[in-house]
Image 1 (spheres, rainbow, N blue to C red):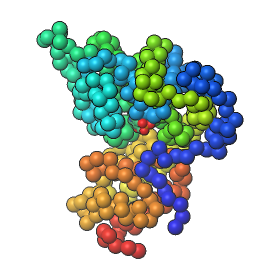
Image 2: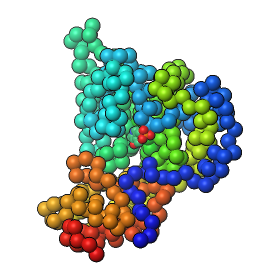
Image 3: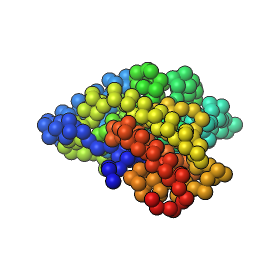
Length: 356
Ligand SMILES: *Cc1c(COP(=O)(O)O)cnc(C)c1O
């Protein structure tokens, strides 16, 4: 069998040879002392790309989000989050455990937006008794991770930012794949970041760095987040090893995300022709394809399809409620996409559990 076609996530990307060369050559220092020049360079570059004053390197997106929430809300405050968001679903309740924050999940519309009327309700819940009102932080995610990989448009973000400001709360944007969103919308990432107080984005997804996320925002918020990073155990010493890969990610890996988006559309086109699979109605906007097994039309189930595909070297993941997600990235070529389509067609054409 040829190599695995890894479609579970763009987190499976491996560092490029240029990244490994850059890590080897990086100038290093102790970043907890603020003396790693490569980390500082990455932090400045990140802030500039997102149009913010400052940035801080984090070991993960989870820690970046957590540090941002701790920064924006005191204990007892409220984190208004999407009910399907990464922060709410996959981050182990960190803001509640470490920050004493109460999560208020808001159900998303089909396109992944949180209806602003519902957000306003969540922010206003204590208006009758303002003396007990909770301070709050509003968290949005773009593109979403579990609802089609759809980016939030800039008009929606501006309205959400205005709503947050009107309530005196911060807007934190979980922009794990913010450059995919920017590409899909045809705008610079700084336009997406503009209404947000802080933005988190991952170096370790489509940008293919092995480790790391950036948190960007104003000087004061980032100084606070840096203190929380230390508190959470995220102060890393010669982190220039990681930052060097991140610089290559930001200078050399953003433009090629267009290939991933084209490959996602190619995959969706291929899957659309397979009887028994039901694709999301809209063509993919970024690097994710979502589909379900139509159990009225096939004896296959989500599990039998995933297992069948895996036996033939195509890795897929279920993302809740029977939805299967396939994510394209730098480790997936057009030929890999075609192979995945052939394998899935063959699995669907064969009885569940059968071997061929
Ligand atoms: C991956 C992801 C994160 C978390 O990043 P880690 O580095 O895996 O902790 C946060 N938000 C979204 C939307 C993500 O896709």
